[in-house]
Length: 308
Ligand code: BG6
Picture (cartoon, rainbow, N blue to C red):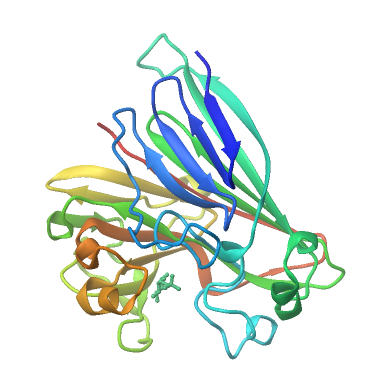
């Protein structure tokens, strides 16, 4: 059995022999679908999302780079639109690779597939280039496994001077009913609340977060010093763990749900009560800046897993 694969009309699709699939738009290198072996969709995508390259995609996994939100006071990125240009640029498909691994519980090997996408200053449109005139290279890898999806971004500074970046993997997870969802892994984390203006940092005392109104928080979880001591964020629905999100070299997690009024204000958010079926858990590096010296690189990744 082979991975089936297609690359046409600005979309790359891969399907594992066991039925799991992923679909990525070259526009923004936006993951717009991730399905399990039963065809159940794991990501939320707005019914009114523009998939024609006219606007950043509302749903899936848009990539935020090199600025989170807008940064009028940060000279290098002050001219850029909200969330930067990566999600609105046309990326190049670099290729695919498959690998096999045998889980401890099984004798049969599992296949996974990795899709690589690239965007560099040379491939940027003139508008974005004029607003962020640095020589850079981005490689974004999307790896589909049997029960996981990993997305990983490598930023290289190809310039002869330093530049500052922020990175965020703006993942819209699909849930059945937000009122029965709780989020663990953020207890005792500090966060900045962006609802109604940016608040001073606070600390979450409850071990679980539930959502019953607009939420827009930038968390800094209490990870340990080594990469193996990262605190996973889990999304529990109806008492069952639905998703586990593990960050690699990304110290922040944004939790976002627009709720009624914000969803009503977003023209590309449909259906309007779709906020009940989504939750953004967005691993990133967005409090402060990653300064990349000439020739340096930064890599950050997330792995989202689920179980049946
Ligand atoms: C989140 C931000 O990451 O993205 C929110 O924290 C923002 O403040 C949301 O509203 C959606 O942004 P956009 O640009 O896709 O509408």
